[in-house]
Length: 463
Ligand SMILES: [Zn+2]
Image (cartoon, rainbow, N blue to C red; front, side):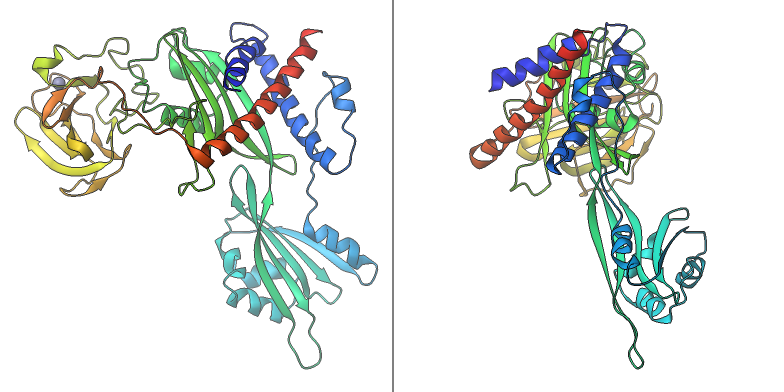
């Protein structure tokens, strides 16, 4: 199982999307469309529609069909036989009240208005931003039958507010309504991007491969425990990413989570998969293909890697002098670059010290401590304050004995300085028992997806 999965991911996909191939960009688009089609067709098959044609001709244009019918339309179909019902759509405007919105929708219904104002769920309408759509269904006397609005969501799903009339008004009773927020699945496409790092640097390579910024940020975060992007990334490194993108009724909603990721950094292969064990409290995490967590007790770099800081000094050669006498490592970066806590801990000291200038010292579990010196400013740190790994603690500067802007970083064990660039990475937990079984099931599902891509490759190769 492991060898097969690894092999498919590490070799077949390299062949499939070869960054050195000039056809690469075009192929990526085809692949994306094809994967979308396969999953959409999978859903269509589940609904009893034979999904033959798109497979017969791999070059046939793929179109995404909206699978979801709005609730109001279904109700409309049921209701048109018995009575006249109208559907209206309006967009929220700045300064709208429930009364003004209902008026524009053509609703003249005091009972409905009173319900929406009072009901906590229905009041979700007040949170809509200008420009967001609201659909209403009204009968021939302009009373409300139902109302629907999209409250937002993530790549996987949208949250929809639905207000429905349960019972019509009669001579002596008011109409009754109910409100609910329901989760409506988006169509999730799996986008794939790949490329190679060239002399232009990391971000240029990401742009060339059309990797969206929010996906790049995830990539940096996923590998933050194992790679120092400032110093480790080298020309010739290669990457592949598969990430989710949510579509609703054929319209792009937003990019989602990276589901699988690979980076070949200086000939060393790093791979990560998203996986959420059922008993996990925080939802999920990234694991290597053999079920080892990607999270480490300490980040590889205390300096945020960004478009601005990426090209600043010493990318290939960190300024670490003779660290044994220097006691730390210097990270060159522009003044103001974000400095991040490399591990969970507590603020031991924040303030000024001779030579160090503005400095933050953090205490971590098991006798470790970290020093961040020459800061231009602090991110509101107080002594005794708990901090999380990756939390902003201050900004790069040149206070104290510093000839130019850089972060002086020390990593100590029982107060003895260690070289953070060469300490062995602490072992991370491995999935066991039930979680491991779930992980195996999940990766086997992923293998099917990758196999679907491989099938497509065979088809294109024959053209
Ligand atoms: Zn230094």
